Length: 193
Image 1 (cartoon, rainbow, N blue to C red):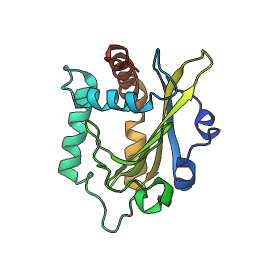
Image 2: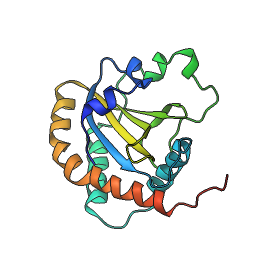
Image 3: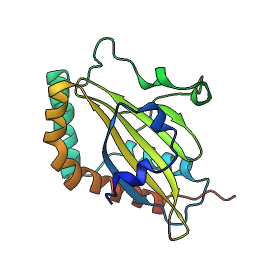
Image 4: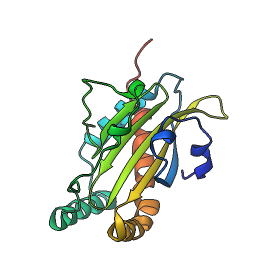
């Protein structure tokens, strides 16, 4: 479910120091019934596995297929020449040498992974974006995943692109992700500690 931006900004996340020139596009919360304080890595594995699985025919799948096709035709998914990745801003304690930065099932690269937060980056001709996953203790005593989408649009094209996809993000894509991720978490095979 969509939640206020302040829920993200008031947390002491490390991503804040790296994205001072980014704006918050969206903040969403995902339920993780039965999750404990150390389960963010397990949730991330579930998300990657769900993203890598073929999806049944759906509006979300159609929207992504159209988006990727348009991206290929118009060159939207190319990284602009001279673009600096956020990894160049990482402080020494967040650098994870030798870590595979490819994210299975998602069009992002891994910036860093901590016990309570994960930052993923996407860079193309429309936007420089970050998906930040934060693991938070909720009022009910359990844990939940919060996803903040932070962006820096790439000029007028990026602003127009973000405005054009806003209704699809809010009405189709994020609700579908919420269902997919929450169902994948519920169906996972928990590890025995």
